Image 1: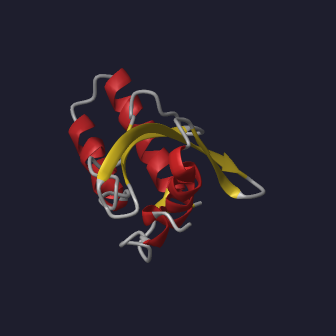
Image 2 (image 1 turned 120 degrees about the vertical axis):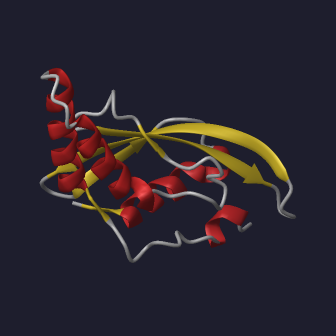
Length: 135
């Protein structure tokens, strides 16, 4: 049986977020906060601009959020809620997920996901992360 979410594709698949760039901006942002630098908002704005390409819509109705406080340069944390539908498109359930992106010399990066695997949603969400990020 084909699930509704399997036929959707991420609309910005040709544009990608640089993980190295995001991690570098995170380091500068956290350093600016730690050292009380007045230009924190500049780095925060750059991070937000990069994250405009995160998956949203097609069940990710509230968007994907970057957890800037829990993230570190070697472990980027994202959260999202997925709104599931039945075979005729009626909304039936929400599931919440945390996606951790970890750099890998062998694979570029590894994406780990938590949360309920209702209708095998975890595989779909991980595939979206591989579409949106470049290592």
